[in-house]
Image (cartoon, rainbow, N blue to C red):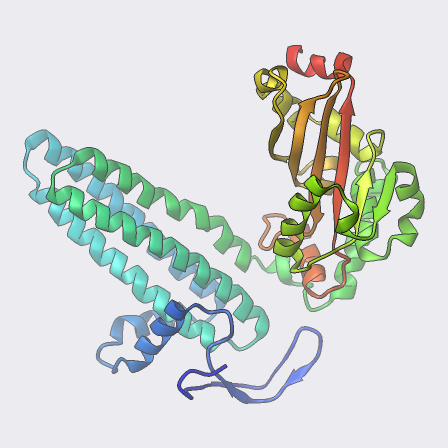
Length: 402
């Protein structure tokens, strides 16, 4: 894709899989929004004098880590400025003199403008990324900042109007939102730049062998029996996991074989996570080791206890549940959807737990980052799981009253 025939020079490089890419020219990559393209074009249209601030950031961003550091510094400056505004807004309210708050707003606007300059410079570095790995990570950083700045732009507009109208409560509310958002992206920036997370990305065979070894060890030690089994399904094939599946459930070759209610749940998840219209799944029955692991988990018991009033009113509950990373069920499922949790006519606590077997990008655990690399290289089979839950009344009542 090009933009008005304006292209960027890209030096020859070698992809992670060993493929050599010749020297070439390219425009902005596919997937950028019209707004991203407009920002890029506006930067190119600026003359040298107008680009001083942007060039300052761009020249200092010599690596992905430098870009992350600049983003973190810009965020910290913004938080300091908003804290100062909150302080002077309280002073202005108590004295009735709003000049100090207005001056603090001007300082915040200057810091905010610097963030936009840094963000535009990051786009320029993105376009000139020297390899696909750096490009992919810079792009995620750029889009993360993009969403962040849009929210901050709105907060700042509301704060400005509130200061003009001397509405203290609104100033504080929006200022706290402005400040809190920056904490949300700190972990993402750190994860993107930790070297041990990606050091084996160019050696996927070694990476997968390492995960295989870890999974087998956990499975043999009965610390993560289901986790190991699901990994083997994804990394090899269902045949090698035949005995496990036979003991615990069955394979479903098409979503159309599911009940209509579950089809409506599974199809959008598959489309969102795998960009697929249909996919193989595994249904685990109520006596499966995975169903038992869910029942034993502290998170599931707490969820039942927190929803006891609705359950006793015979309501059907739909939601989601995250399990501890340091458990078999947590490693196997992570976060799963709860479908139609209710008490059936026999008094059993019944539900379906629906999950897709995939790995989050930029997860805080490097093992998930490695598995995500395997997934992006199409070395893992994507599938979904449905775990049937049916717990007799004498057991689930203990969750509520223990």
